[in-house]
Amino acid sequence: MSIVIAILIFAAIILFHEFGHFIVAKKCDVKVNEFCLGFGPKIVGFKKGETEYNLRLLPLGGACVMEGEEEDTDDDRSFQKKPLWQKALIVAAGPLFNFLLAYILSVIMIGFMGFEAPQVSKVMPDYPAEEAGLQAGDEIKAVGNYRVYFFNEVSLYLYFHSSQDIKVTYVRDGKEYQTVMTPQYDEESGRYLFGIYGPVGYKKVNVLGALGYGAAEVRYQIYTAMESVKFLFTGRVKLKDMAGPVGIVKSIGDTYTESVSSGALYVVMNLFGMTILLSANLGVMNLIPIPALDGGRLLFFLIEAITRKKIPQKVEAYVNFAGFAALMALMLVIMVSDIYKIVA
Image (cartoon, rainbow, N blue to C red; front, side, top):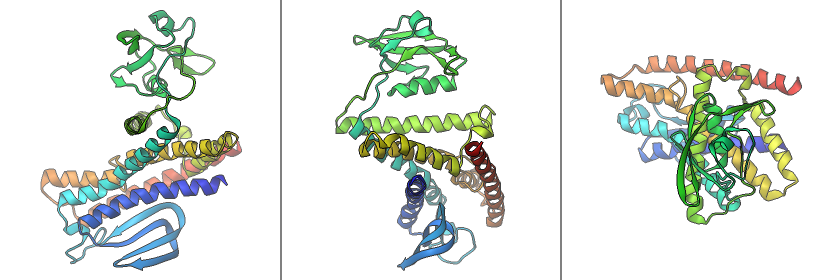
């Protein structure tokens, strides 16, 4: 069951990403030859107008194949014949639609469940929060320069800034206060803590509240993904800490199993949460300026805009192929690591 659910989640995220490319390409009058989910041999498909819509064998991917995207063509509606700003908009639309999907699901999830406010329910003895004078009922408004909307954001910020003195802004009885705390390492949890416990239960919101906090949820997911990428490039996140499709399927399966006993609503909401996380992460990862990713293509467009010289299509194709091969090799290594962690 977990594999089926994982495939459906992957399919939804990929389809939304490729639909972003597709709909903007159509709006820019670019000929789209194929819109497909998956890679490899075609399982089933149909043609409507000038575009083929196909389902292919391997579900972990998809494509919006545009005329003249990878090859020279005389068609006036080819991708390469379009103005630079339109090409950049088409490429950027994929990641932007991932953020849109994350937002839509966040609004629905918060509308049904509410959110955990950054409110202190209890202060741990002999920890920085007690020394700084925080009390139960205080609401954390900001940590450092990061505005806080959810209690989890406090823990997240500490994870990425554990060795620093952190300015904390909090509200008590309608008045705003500031203090500085240095997180303390907790042996039992293996984390740096301020020494505060979070709220019990969820705070309900109306429709407007769900729209606002939905945006805050997407911001939180994007921030997490961006900081994680920084950790990856600085070596603070190791290969063994990364997860590929196998690891993600396991996480989705664990989420499903743990939610079943709480009822169908909790199953759906928790799977929405996983989809939000994965969609936001895919959006961020695709914007990294690495060949074969949307960010790599946007980098080529930026170079072209600055130099006023078009990069030869063959050069771009070779660089993208090399980047794609490197990404596939990395995915293979991560997949082997995922399997090892499961069977070990």
